[in-house]
Image (cartoon, rainbow, N blue to C red; front, side):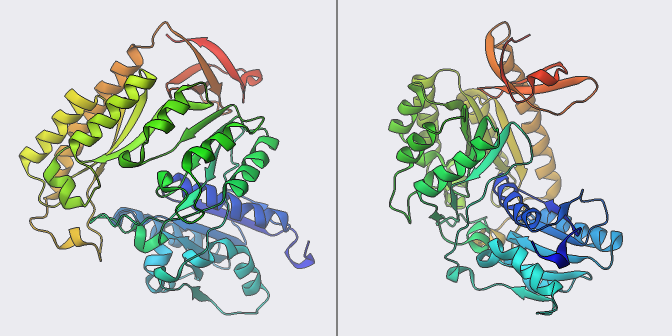
Length: 424
């Protein structure tokens, strides 16, 4: 441990996806192992690390606001910015007062070393980035911020190039860690006492593209790790949901009856304009296949409303497809955000913001009803619930295997344990 960094403090601000949280946690671990104390992001710190998202303009704005807020808390702190926004617009971030280091996708795993160099006066404030097509690296990461669940990175990048999305520009081409590396990470997670692991990636189901290994073989290897009692797959493209994977999960594995699947639109014309790799029939067939094999699964479905060219009829088609055909347990609704350097940004007509707002509201109301309907079907049933440590108003909560939130009076003896509960 270096003498010059003992008693220094670091704070993290993480925006966006679960993958970002796993990466921030791993970067934080390097700071802690080198003598730093981690403090809350609203407290004075010697170093602030911001791991950014850039999926929408609002995400970019939140990053800029965070930088200004942290610089105000401690004008002398080193501020390091990484993540998708940092890769896409490094110069824009460098021009914000207080920013010392901007770290692109190829150097994200080196944030601590770059901060250390700056502290030692070995370098001046600068941006570390390269063209995204030159990014080859991928660093192992998992989150460890709570006692019950860890997000484990298995893959990064995406080759799909959907017309609205900047992720391939921000994270690069699809690449993955080896099964051996991921299993070792899972063993470390188990040793820390976690009971549940969520597999994360930009395009998780594309695992194996660079290592030439198979996604099902990864699941089987993780299933054998002692100490982990549950696994979830955070998000997976519908065209990559293989029947052999579903049948294996259903046949007594530790993987739960819970899937997060992006639909994005329930209109074939909009899906085509988005450059998605399926149509509504393929999507419906996948959902039906899973239900036929696994029963009443919790499906969380992503939907973008107000995509350019989405007519009133296109939206009604999406609404009715979700309400009458898919009937998911939850809908994650996102208004379309126009992003530079994407084909969709130039499409016409662009949908008015007021129309997007109305469509978001309608789908949110539908989500509320579908979620209530799903929970109602399980009332009175006995379920296994993994309780978390959060306490609010004398209550604690946990989740069933199929992701129903259960609230009970706080009992510290239940934290991090799977308990049998009757749902009410």
